[in-house]
Image (tube, rainbow, N blue to C red; front, side, top):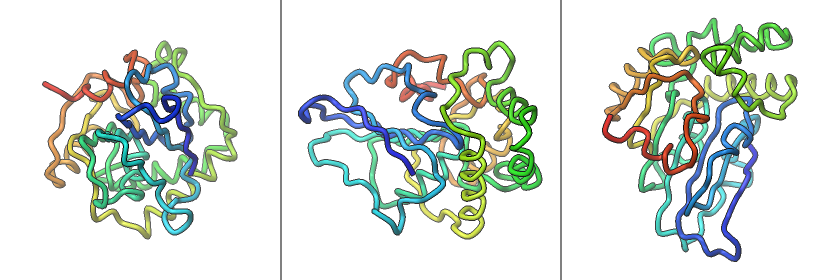
Length: 227
């Protein structure tokens, strides 16, 4: 797992936002978002877990606020890292669930494993990105990660193995945001899962990836408010 930090100089910041991006991604997906008053930690590449290795990075005591946002398979990864051990001022799950390989609560197993099997095919990768972005116009605006297909496939394979043997029993999420045009995590599966987890949801007419709709992290943080 990789961590990209963007912090105010000399420890001046007292608000922290932690973001878990989606599988196969890197910090480029949200690099255009202005951090504003936040220090920003972006986690990506879940090929290896922090659990049982170097441990979860310690969050400095100077932060008077700490918020969590997780997207796609990053929702599962964030819960794997933090579980119910850490209290956040808010924790927003976007277009993901804690049962990501599941016909009822996530992505159908045959589709998930088919993505792994076909990832070597450039046309299959382009079809996946088209579903992720929502349309060809939106795909043109999507900031593609600087990741090789080999590293992305290795990550997805590693996640598939961990998801199979490490069910998430506790999580930090206080709200979930569902894109009604999501063609990766079916909206009906997201609704069913978060209803079963007793987590309130909000909906946005958006595809799986829609961060380019926003200009700053504060807008993302409040995207589920009043919906």
